Length: 307
Image (cartoon, rainbow, N blue to C red):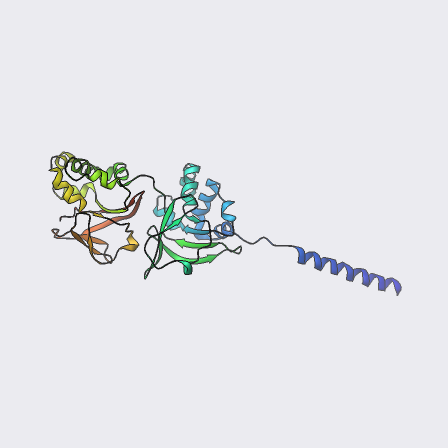
């Protein structure tokens, strides 16, 4: 009987120590990285994070990530992990860190305002809008807000990949082969009394509704030579009619008349995604939106706006 009593005492003490040991064990809380890995909607973001080597930075519990879905990556041309792995790691890390705020920013803390500058983890500003349509950043819409990781970090899911841009509007256009007619027009206009190059290279911010080469051709400019043969001041009047002296992403567009840098107005139809000049018979379709520049944003349109 004495041996049995000692045995029960031994088991009881053992259970006590086991219980204490269990209480002292801390379970690591899941971070944003874990949320990304666990979600079937973030396979391309996961591939990008791993390739860029920034997983450790995303384990911080006091950050907010604007996380693009797989559909957003594919829309940006990043269609597979193989494509992503072909990107320079430093450049990719810069893009990904442009989606991260180094503090906790729940949607409830955002001001109802257009384009509030927010410093991102890569050191440059992104622009957050909160209005009746919801929350967006650089025109990318937040489709699901305030997804919280176990460690307290916040995810806002967005429908587009955003990217920092160091080129101004003129340099951006010069790098786009579909805007060669527009570039020729800007350079010729700059020889007149209105220095369009200087304006669009300035601090801004500006929004440019940029006609494509096909838009210029449809307006009667068959070649670049036809553009450069046009009077410089005439071109300047047309070009500044395509410029708004503000940063206007697609999520900032509202239906109504907007005053341009030329002093004239264009008619925006936000529901249809069109913009119409005073002398245009038909509105121009906005065919690509939210192309970032260091001093503003560019939207491509399919016809030249006529003041």
